[in-house]
Image (cartoon, rainbow, N blue to C red):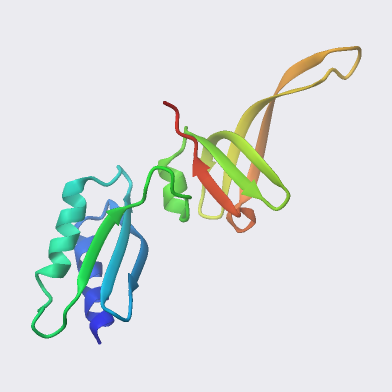
Length: 153
């Protein structure tokens, strides 16, 4: 009952802010509510406060005690949803698939796959030495074990 009410309040809060989307949501046995958000243009403190208030102000602590934590997906958090990939087009990603780890620029993201592009040094087809070649690979979401944005400082 409590979780259903919180879910309803969270859904309503997200409807009011269509650029935000849910990454993770849990209600533990001790009524600890955890909400992790992301957004098409990022998530700022005001967004977290608005969602938190939309939930907290509609629950009665006299009926049921709870704790509430609303956060944004961290910059180093793995990408989980296709919508997160779309907002990161043009950025460099590290993608782990079955037996390899790829680093490249995310150039495209659809509902079922991404496209990574990168430069690599390979031996010349004829003669000695190496040549720089442009590589491109499409990767289905189902093949991705983990993907993170590579941050530059």
